[in-house]
Length: 259
Image (tube, rainbow, N blue to C red):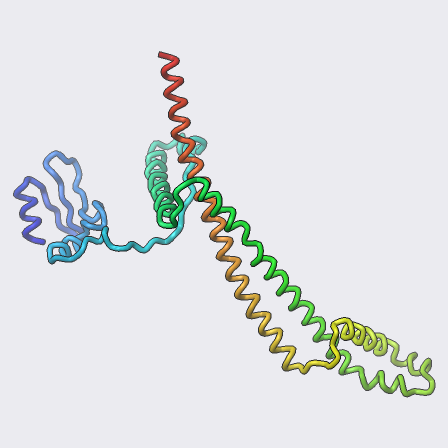
């Protein structure tokens, strides 16, 4: 590394040391930190390369997978009022456009039609939503059925006494609400098709299984929502990138007409 820096100085470059090594060519106004030249030019990467190591740029890079929407500088008030912001937004849009193209390449999307199909495929993942709704309904139904079974077991002795009583009207006047609750519970249990009441442990195990399934479906649905947002951003970016050449061509045509 020291030999390299000395060689740069012999070629006329100024070297500035500090937290980072910077260099300035003879015709350059400001110093440039080596690391800003790219992944291959950090001090660690240069030292590794000198030692015979691989170039970082040729190694598989870990991407976040996130693609941000392009900034609409044409209709952005801040961009119109601030030249600095306009420059930043232009550079940022280049990065976002590159990220968009990288994503498309990495996922084997080579045409707008393929992108549209992928967007539609993600949006059409309605089976997960339907499955989640079904599981949530099963949990609600099973929870209610569990309460009806508890009521049935609790009030069965009262109802047996009612059925065995000689003066049912008198008995009913004293336990009318209990009898109504029991008969309602019995109807719901019959409607559920149960010929034998399940144990509390069995009901709990079934509810636990449904809850686990619900959590898994919610996680999957969150992933689908992220994919939908990602591909929607991609499609919007590609629409803008495809539109710009048209706008530039139209502008050239207008200029030619004026000339």
